[in-house]
Structure formats: C-alpha cells, structure tokens
Length: 241
Image 1 (cartoon, helix red, strand yellow):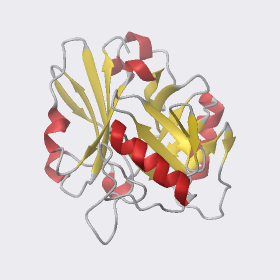
Image 2 (spheres, helix red, strand yellow):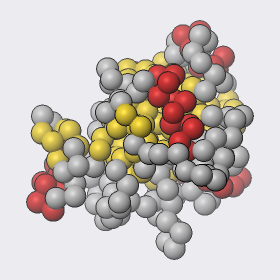
Image 3 (spheres, rainbow, N blue to C red):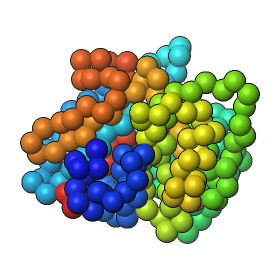
Image 4 (cartoon, rainbow, N blue to C red):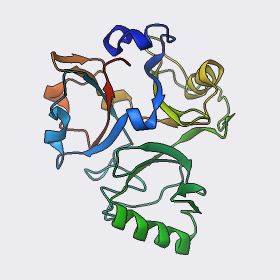
C-alpha cells in the first residue's frame, strides 16, 4: 500500500493506509450511494492518487447511513445518535474530526446535543454545503475514549484520525485482527493523534486505491458487491504522497 502512495509514504509504519497529510492537500469527499455513484470514478490528474474507504455505519432497517448525516448541507438524514465522533467535510474538501459537543467551524463551537446550537449549525451547514457523518470517537483530545472489554471480538479495523497539527490519515490494522481498543491503543502509540474515528468494516469493508493507471482493491468488497454500501469516504492526494 505504501508503494502505491509514493516515496513520501515509504517510511511510514505499515498500519497506515494513508499516512497523515495536510488537510489542504488531501481533498476529501463524502460519497453517498447510490446518488453519488459516479463520483467513485471521478477522473484523476496524472499526478493524483485516490483512497476510497467505507465511511459511517449503515442502518440495519433502512438503506441509509446512520447518525448525524449531512449531504452538502441537506439535513434530511440528520438523526443524531449517541456516538461522540463527527467527521466534517467543508465545500473546499477539507476534512476535520470533532466531538459532537464541540464542533469547531468558522470560529465558533457548536454542541450538537443542544437543540438551539444544533439548529444554528444546520443553518450554517446548509448555506456552506457542509457534509458530515457520525461514528464512535475512539481518541478524543489525545486520550483513549474507550476501555478494554473482556472477550471483545477481533476483526480487521480501520480508523480515520487527525493529528494535533491538523493532518488527516487512515489507519488499517490488516492483516492483524484486533479489538477496537487494541486498534485505538496501537494508533495512539504510533501517531499520538488528537482524534480518531471508527470506520465501518466487517461485511461493509470497501477499500480501493486508485491511480490514473487503474485501481487496486484493498478491502473485502469489490465493485461487484458494493450495492449494500450507503457511503464512501474519498481522499484525492498528490502523487508524491
């Protein structure tokens, strides 16, 4: 995987599917399916690469991503859940991670569990075409936000993280099967991130590395089996990453 990303990533530790990159150089997009299906194959410039991974959890009883979901400001799917983590992508493609009670944007901080603050954020999100998804926050302000559990299952884990200086990266435990706590602790020891958010895996594990020459599958689902997906997170990077 690091060879695909380029020489700048070659020295990165193996669990990093995407080593941390400045948010201005990692153009992010939340792709909602099936509406945005064509975006999975958006053209790449000769000097670009793209990382595609499954984003937030999908609902078990309706075909939609679960949680506080905004699609370019559209709040029809915004159903706030108990999870503490929020991924925000602004219209310039800059990604950032937040605790839902302290979402920082435009010089203000919003507590999405407070109804008036949530309403104010939704007004801004609509005006600025902000996209969001919600998930479990595993690292919050540099500290682990979960505890080890006896008998916790071990699976391949994938985490989105943000460093203290605002860079964005993707951790992937493959081929190791870890508990959620083990994955978060491993990432904390490796990168000391400010925030880390859990990405959906298991039967929703989609991962694809794209270049102008083609695509490399890096998840359990291939293109023939992505009809179950409701959302994908894409990062378009310069080729020297």
